[in-house]
Length: 390
Image (cartoon, rainbow, N blue to C red):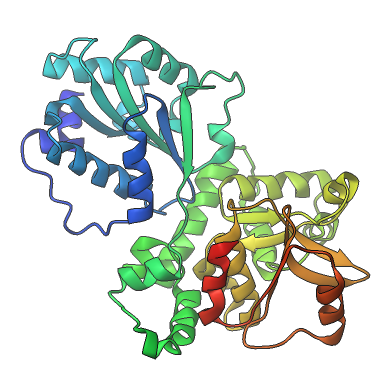
């Protein structure tokens, strides 16, 4: 194991070289702020969204700040050569290699932590018995779920999302001056095709995104949940992408694929837990929120584009606005008398997405009459900045 740990941690023998890694400053700021807390920091989000890169950049910053290199351990726990070792054994081997006592503080960066059985309990034991600051990462919300509440009060969770449009432009080295604001529309259309996954932004490749979706379906859904018919799961996801931005009927998808409503509901949950999709409930009383059909959104516009192509660019704009608002507010869609308004927040902000178009008369009537503290029509890429105050 010693040789393997040296492979994962080249900074033990030479200075780290992360010049090729693009920083995502908004997440780095948050991670820096957590360094002063003892809690375990859990990074989660879609596969290949940049969790490992953020870990490597924080490691480099720790070294620059004066933390001894041999007090920092990074390891990916999905490595086959480590399949016989639990987390505690790996950490103890690390301390042994560098002759570090239990009371000496170490920094642990554990990637793909959910590959280790009973990882919650192991992390709790390390947290309680050793002087550590731990960062762990996983791409599955369902696998991260702590049924025994072992880490309650001991962990902080941070979801890493695909690049937004501003980050996309930064990664592409594009600066748009105020006098050229009209260029935002063409760059947004480019962003719809490419999406916000960092590696794909730097080297756009349709095959990369196809392989990513297949990887998630195979590893995180069919293998993890022991589903024998892989093709039905792939077909299910295709139907989800075709319906993104719309209300979703679980029963209708089940009928198309020849599966039961319960199975259809389970599959939907699997895709949500791997961050491939997000679901938006309807605004209303509790029973309406629970029983009404949810709207579905893609987590990455590039993945949506693979299945949708150039169809209905307005749905990409609505999807993007959802991604900007997600986790900022308790968010719903508004549906009254067959008329729909895209978003309504719990603190009564009404938002309609229109991609260089206007509300139809029925929408306009509902939009004007519905009680709200604030109302926004976002009808161009240039007006997205209005969401900063939401």
